Amino acid sequence: MLPKLVAWSLVLASPSSALAQAHPPTTNSSAQQAWAFALTADGYVAPNENGYVSPILVADRAWLHVEARYNYENLKTGSLWAGYNFRLGKRLVLNVTPMIGGVFGRTTGFAPGFEASLTYNKVQLSFSNEYVFDTGDQSSSFYYDWPELTYSPIKWLHVGLVAQRTKAYHTSFDTQRGFLFGVSHKKIEFTTYVFNAGWTDPTVVLEAGFSF
Image (cartoon, rainbow, N blue to C red):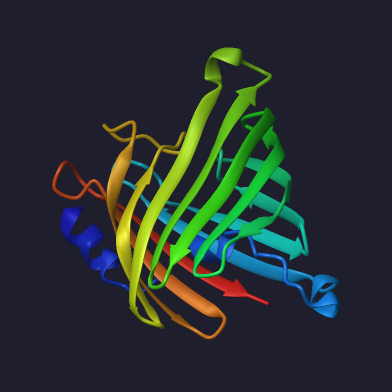
């Protein structure tokens, strides 16, 4: 199992998440009226678990941010989100999008959360989190987060560190940690995430993203 997962981790796939981050509003009036879309698909290969894919569709128009997710809060579970985009700074740029979401499927409830990124030159710290209030079973309510620190030595390459706390699959760690390696070309990104390598059998996430 381990050699197979390590081989998968060497595939160039890109989470991530950068395409799912909030698109900052622009000062151009015509651009403010245009929609910007991003679609990502994360393929999960976890030890002793069935593999699955989690797609995320994001749409932004000026300050408005909406998302649709599946297999994200839990397997066979969808969620719909709405939020407000904020942007501050020029050289040191902060993007923050507070959101509220409805969750339905295997897990049913609602979830407040936010996405944020802080970018300076070639370094970016991004963070996505939420707290899911399970209205079907309050004891199943949980906190999810995905912090990520990336460095882009050249425009098309990004490497970094990542962590995740999720309910969709289970490992021996409540909070998983690992590294990432990704490439991009124009509107396409591919990133490979490897969690828990060196501590236990690794979990590999292969992500492809497209913005339009």
